Image (cartoon, rainbow, N blue to C red; front, side, top):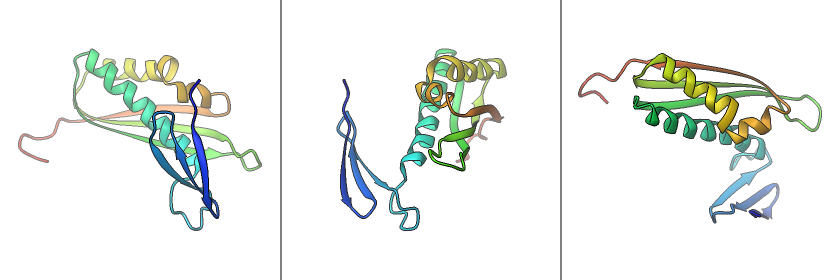
Length: 141
């Protein structure tokens, strides 16, 4: 069993330590906003999970991925518990990429590999899309 610990450090602020030993601050007070809130972290976890899948799958497909940005947007329920009810995941990829490979990678992360998405599908309607940007010009940054 994996274990995370969360220590209250005053007000609505907490310091979490992950099962792998990494410390992450949380701030549940959106007015003071000193660190992300728990539900913001869930949204970021969705992006990180799907990004990992996309990079690994496209690598295995021998695609020339130069950059990837995942933009996760969502709406929450109006009444408690204010779960995510609508989520959109946008993959913004750059490189020499086969569109069919990108579509396949996206469907694999959506349907099979991303455990965060699998959990969130229980409360949220998802939409998935991608944009393929041209490779960067030689010598540009």
